[in-house]
Image 1 (cartoon, helix red, strand yellow):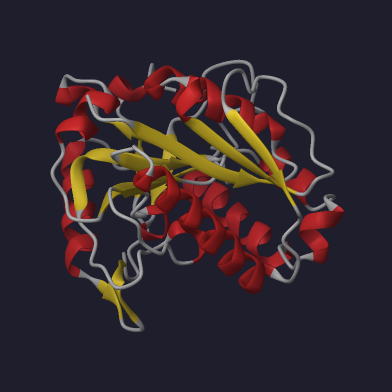
Image 2: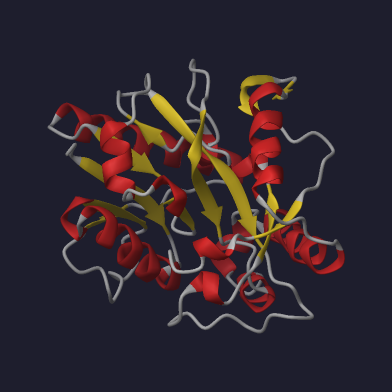
Length: 278
């Protein structure tokens, strides 16, 4: 088995960090998790367990500038881990969860231990929403996918979060500078930053996020909720395969190494086999 580490940086995100440690800890062992808290005023998550938690001076500035600085820092930490004995590093936000399709028949660690790729590997991005007519406020103590069933297939979250060589992630882990991307057929990156309307409303009350210019970004996340509520969801693996093909061949004009869904807003119902994963 390969040595695999998972890293993240977060601020004011303890609920997600607790879930992040619980999920990735089971997959790779808590001792292989590295959490960097953005600000020395942050508290260590209550369920951090044996993960490595480091408080760093708060990264100041507005969204774009701060994101570039954050990902430069995390890219450097990932490089150090790879140089010092890890074979693979997964980098993602605290509200993002890399999962493997149960049909693959192996654990995520087993799958990545046998995966062959050059520098980076991507998973198909799934932006989880809340169907306002069918789903209630999230209960953080219960499995997420037993409470949420609908999502937007979103190229913004088709991120090259898996790396096996020192490299430089772009802002938000959205690309690896100087490298193409490959979307693995069995991996999905589930983003939960849009999966609860109350959570989104509460984030507008977060003075840190508002002062850093996150208002428009947070408001945009509510659009996923409206889309999964109003649009009829597609079912079956056909649409997931089609989305993967589409993103593999359609690129952003301004960035050749970032995938795109174009104008296609694909809403899906999460396959039932995923329900016990997270």
